[in-house]
Amino acid sequence: MPLTYRIFPDIGLVYVRYEGHAGIPETMETFGRYMSDPGFRPGQKQLVDLSAVTSWDKDYAALLGIQAKKAEAFLRGPETIMVYYAPTPQTAEMARLIMRSWEDLDAIVPILQDTERGTLEVLGLSETSFDALARRPV
Image (cartoon, rainbow, N blue to C red; front, side, top):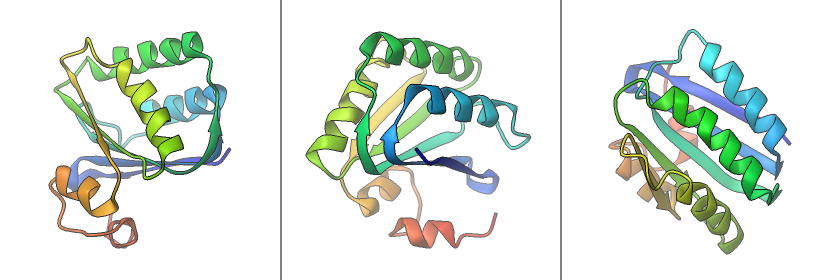
């Protein structure tokens, strides 16, 4: 599963993109890299692009475990907005599962969107597509 992230420090945003099978081990490894990245800052908004996901690990206990590790990191700083772009019924199901794990945490605000434009608007960005965001200088 290709899993990538890009930090946009000038706007306090991290763009995360999953492709293919979304596996928990790869998610943990990539999250670890993000946490040790010099560009990491508490409170960075998270744009999680699930549009290219074809399947995912449906082990809810393991998912809760990874979400607990993420919560430890996100709870150290200010409120974190996490916007999940999930344009298909399958990816929306995955996003809702992830979002349920954040329900009891006031410091994390999960939002589900099904259009690129809506996703970017919720984040307060002027770009109207992820391609335009990708062209933004870092």
